[in-house]
Amino acid sequence: MKLELQKDALELLKNLIKTQSFSKEEDKTADLLEDWFRTKEMTFYRHLNNIWATNKYFDPDKPSLLLNSHHDTVKPNSAYTRDPFKAEIEDGKLYGLGSNDAGGCLVSLLATFTWFYEFKDLEYNLIFAGTAEEEINGKNGIACMLPKMPKIDVAIVGEPTLMQLAIAEKGLVVFDAKVKGTPSHAAHPNDNNAIYKTAEVLKWFEKFDFPKDSDALGKVKLTVTQINAGSQHNVVPGHVDMVIDVRVNDAYSNTEIEQILQENAPVDEIKARSLRLNSSSIPSDHELIKAGISLGMETYGSPTLSDQAMLNCPSLKLGPGDSTRSHSADEFIYVKEIEEGIEKYIKLLAKALKI
Image (cartoon, rainbow, N blue to C red; front, side, top):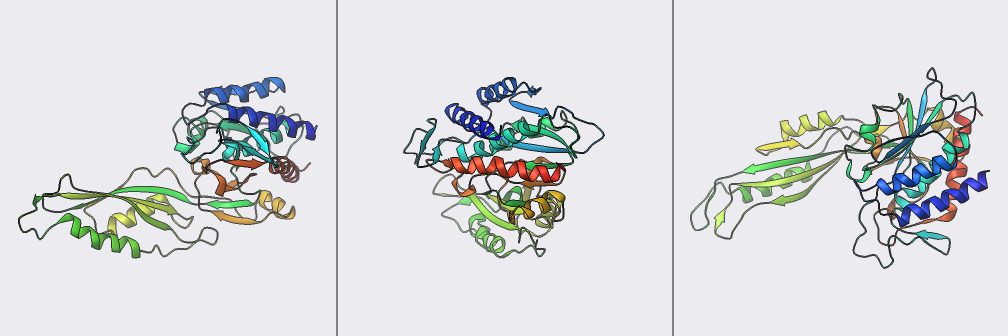
């Protein structure tokens, strides 16, 4: 059965690649996930472009383990030399948009869920969720599904990690800031030029340090990523707009980050766009982590954001594929990575589910 699942998962991934599923346009790939459940005769539910299911012998008195990955993709970049929607296997590599991020993880978790679907007396209930809008942190993805699914006690989020255990993930807060000055004609003296003032502000942001480090995630990473001012050559603008990207470790909440910058940053205004994308982690002594380590997996902290940020439970990021291939031209995943991913997921859960 395991070999059959690996074959079926690969075929599903090929079909997913062939089917356009940009964020907010995932209806056709959701249909493909529906087809899997119907073919395998498993009960499932659909909300918008999200598909979810529980194991056959779901017991509300037991804790639940979520297996989640996404089926939306970014748009292909201009450097592609291949048709991004043509699923081709060459030299053991399956090429195509979304193959690595996160199609390989999605079909591997789905195959794993299918493997355990009819098992009785599991230590945990299993919940599978194939969700939409992950690439844009959209409101109609995992965020809208959480109230509809049973309570989740722990989660595995499928993202390419080379099947290593990402036990923590940085959160994200994006800030809009403003440096104000005196608008004037460029020909006249102006001792309150907002653009000149911004030079010192940029130096402050460059040198500012959040003191609390994290064992898994290191330091908070603050980066000024956008700056904009002025409308024409002979007018000194009244303000300069800035955008600051802050990747938050698990030593701070997003609310604390906002408070620190509002109290200390030498700007006239600074405001977070959202505080909902928090850092995520799972205790290093959790049974899932201990099971993974016993199988030879290593632990690390991930700097990239995923649907973990939407969850309010301990969560682990784990999946086949390599994060460095994500959003790249001529994206691919090794067929062997999918086969080994399914094998390792099953072994990991077998230990955690006491099978």
